[in-house]
Each structure stands twice: as structure tokens, then as C-alpha cells.
Length: 328
Image: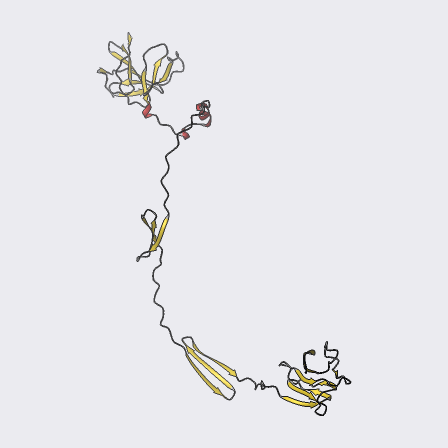
């Protein structure tokens, strides 16, 4: 005959539910969780005998082998009566269970032992756990003002090559070495020597340094012309003007010039500026008009000669310029 009773004492989550007779010996029926350690030998002071049953609420059923002190896994039945239905509840400290229709609750697991990560749930489970949107909460109080930020007051590289920052609160920070190591000593320098010699119209410059000897030769330039232009006097009439010569056209008998037919002499040196330069004094007789005839190649806006004037004429690159002064 089997006897069923509920005990208050826990043996990690193992509860003795039933004591019965098996060949005039006590046979126990025990329930526990799969993760619990199965009792061996005794439970709550009672000897666990052959034929005692252990039912895992979340797993298999075992029968006790008293001689070998072990629990033997029992094959699952292909049929039989449905097990008793249980229900769960959560308290402030535990998840609890009980059989439906009974009053007493038993601790299943402490809430402190339950730890879940987001990755432990499927998207469907996460959606099922999502509750309805709550009401908007009241605005939080303003936080306290933060501390003033620091600014860099100065920077300095110390003797070890480290950059030291000094902040506005006088604190400092070493940000590390910023200078490189000294390089290897360079080779001794060699001062160059320069020698200058001249032979005839050729000057030779010789330079010797660590790379070897270099020479350069410079020839004298051609003789230059005198910077002082010659001055000549010629009589009026047919007058040939030489380049780069100041020509004075005159008539010593009358004291003025009445007629001039100007010819420009050929240029002998195209590499210099060539100027045809001459002076004359126009007629002082009201009845005589001084005339000036120029080559057709000369461009000029001098259309007439005024009496009682001294004229200065300059022709360069076939362009005529002039100046005149009245004689009082």
C-alpha cells in the first residue's frame, strides 16, 4: 500500500512525495529537477530501497538499484495516464510551482540565479515579451552644471625631448617623446681653393674641393666704343649726318641756316643704339624761310620751321623727335 505525503524540507529542489510498501519494505517516490543532484542511500533520514522511483519534472524517470547505489534510467512508457498539471508563479525572490488544485507553493528557482542575455531569445520570443507602450514619463530634473573645461596654457619640450603640456589649472601632462635621436656625425668638410690665371685675352679659373677639380675659361670682351660722342660743324645745303655724332649745321656769313637737304649715313654697328643728332638756327630775316628736307624713310610731324628758333633734331629707328627754343 502506497502513502503520499508532502514535506516542508527542501533537499536542493528534491521533494519526497510518496512512501509505499514493496515486499514489506518502504519504497519511495521522489521528484526533482534534471539539474539537481540525485540522492544516494538516504533522503530525509529514510533509506532509499530497491524499487524507489525518481521522477525528473523536466526529464526522465529512474528506479533505484540499492545494491549498486545508483539510479537506473527507465524506458519511457508508450502510454499511460497523463501526469498531473502544474502551475507557476513569481514572488519577490523565487519562481514557484504547485500542482493545480493544491494550495501549497514550492520554490523552483531563485530569481538571483536567473540571468538572460538578449541573444538567448528568438525574434518571436522577444516580440512576445514586448509589452504595450507605457505613458510618457515626467521630465527629469536638470542635471548639475559640469566642471569648466581645461585649456592648454603653455607647451614645452624638456631636456629628454618630451612634450609637456601645462593646462589652465596648472596641471601638466607628458604626451611623450617628440624629438628624434641625434644623427651620426657628418664627415669633415673640405674648404675649396680657387686659383685664377690669365694668358693673353683668356682668364682661367680653377676650383678644387672634395669632389675634385673644376675649371672655367673666360675670354675678354671686344673693345668698346668711347662713350663721348664726337661734335662736328658743317655748312648748310646738302648735309650728311653721321650716326652717334653731334652735328652743328651753320652759315657763318648770315648767322642762320636757310636750306638743308639731309642724308643719313649708313649704320656700321647694328648692335648698338644709333642716333642721328643735329642742331641748327632758323632764319632771322622775316623775308627768308628756313627749309628742311628729310629722307622719305623718316617719320616726322615737323611740318614747318619757325623763324628765330634754335632746333635740336634726333632721329632713331627712322623716328624723328625735336625741340626748339625761340632766340630773343
